Length: 408
Image (cartoon, rainbow, N blue to C red; front, side, top):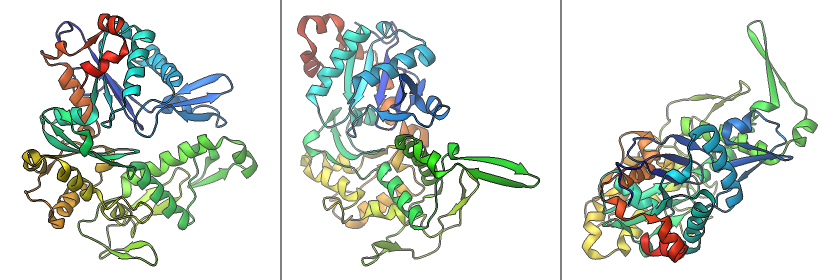
């Protein structure tokens, strides 16, 4: 129907923090953007660049649910139309589309997405695949345990022969945004203010710089969603730059609800946009300690390594050994220095594994963040994949419900 050499299919990897779009068979997507829309009066602004250079009274909305599904198809349509016109310069009616979807099955979302893409964009064919399965394909594994920690969710998904075993899936919200919130609370406890770029002006006076902040009345007149967006962007960059993973368990002070460093880490000074600085010397490896230990606010969470054990322990005995020897890390929240070594130690230390655990990941951080998209690019470019597409003719004959039979 649609062979890899005859037509260029597109891969849509939709996440809560970033969307990735590109041609199948290529190494990287053509476009990576945040699923955000700024609305000011009757004007719409898209992506980081459009939001940054417009009025701070703009309201910022996301059209994604926390589980990685689209909640507002109208805003998704406006964003996609803007991308097709301003960045991608293509007509979707000429390209079959492969979409990633959350590993936890959502029948109604699948059907709605299929109807929307066929009816709005007249696409010739579609296929929808679980993100964990695609991540496994990106590293050449059809059977593995995919541990994916992104912006809003962290999941441990057993994959067997290219199928995500959903009844064994373990998922929670202790992910990248949770760590960002921990950093923000730590900064607030130190009385460190984060001032977005629009809230001050810097003038050079000889060898010195004078920083003039806007008044509180003017700042309060700006929309809170705009302020929160840019504050979070600064904190997220600080988090990614400064935080590291401790290579050993740290002692926990239950009374103070904080971890105690056993040794000092290397000092790192972070420069804020208004030329103030932040020194997280004692906190660089303390904040991430929480994701490897129980959190009292989340009684069901006992650490990332426990998620891996729990997911594999539920699986059939015949594949447990292979799952333990093929634990694949992906997602932006796994990129902290020392993360892979620490979770390997934690899994081995708990001594719950009846088999030797082996953790692996992509060699580069970019590939680790793009694992699901890369897997989709590989899968949709295979010569045998043309048999799997749900075509427009099949959709018109059987309706959107057939996507459940075509895409397992």
